[in-house]
Image (cartoon, rainbow, N blue to C red; front, side):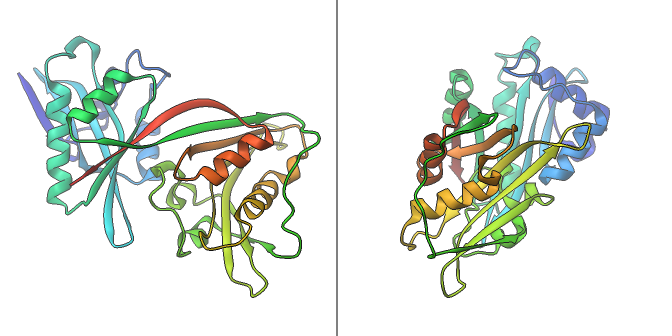
Amino acid sequence: MVEIKNMQHCTVEEKVQAWNTGFEGYYFDMTTTPDAFEKRGEAEGLSDKLSVVAFEDGTPVGLVRNGVREWQGKKVAWNGGTGVAPSVRGKGIGKKLMEAALDILQSEGVHAATLEAVKENKQAIEFYKRMGYSIVDEVHFMQLKGKVKNIQFSSAGDKISLSAATPEDAGQLSFYRGDFTWQTQWESVKDGEAVFAADKTGKAIGYAYFRKTMDHEGKHASTVLYQCEVAPDSEGRKAIAEQLILAVFDQFSGNINRIAVNVPVEGNKLTHEALEEFGFIITAAQVFMKKEL
């Protein structure tokens, strides 16, 4: 017998068991612990109230984990994980989980539901399409390791000035991209840094935010870029984007690992193309999917 429960009525042990069995044999190791499960939920704004767990004969066998944020006056949900245990796949449990989760989102007045799926995972993508989702873009993880020589870029000259800011500051700009993937939104990078580009009048015309990580000796080991965007009505947008990227990655000095997360191929073509020109390579690809509710 299969039962779908709201996650807020489950123990943390049941949640973790549902997650670990649901993602058994996945493309990457998704194994978690009770502490890590709860910390991720808090860090990424995931909600037990909006999530569901499947039980078969009292044993957790799958889940859908959701969160909701508001952008431009609309509630947008993100699916932070859908998994069904291999032993019970093919029984329609995934469909029951998604239907229950979407019903909850609709009851909460959510306007749209979003998710990402590994591009190679054709079976999952087709499943989400049957559930009413459509592919709206492709997003890439991009990487550039080590020292870089002979960087070529367009000079923005004296047209812009750069200043330090915070990811939250970026979230207040009129051209902030709250429609990009969940983990690149400022709420998921609260402890990061940001840089703003301003024109001669002091008006913000571009932003980028990122997070630096240190090794066990306290030395700079990597920088992760989450968003880089330029106001659509700005002149010389390519040069502005390049200057922001150069600032984020310290002019590409240092022998570090440089990563850009979930860069939209079409939705943020300017940044994607600039990163490619700087030598970044694509290390993973996902499709970004959306369902209007």
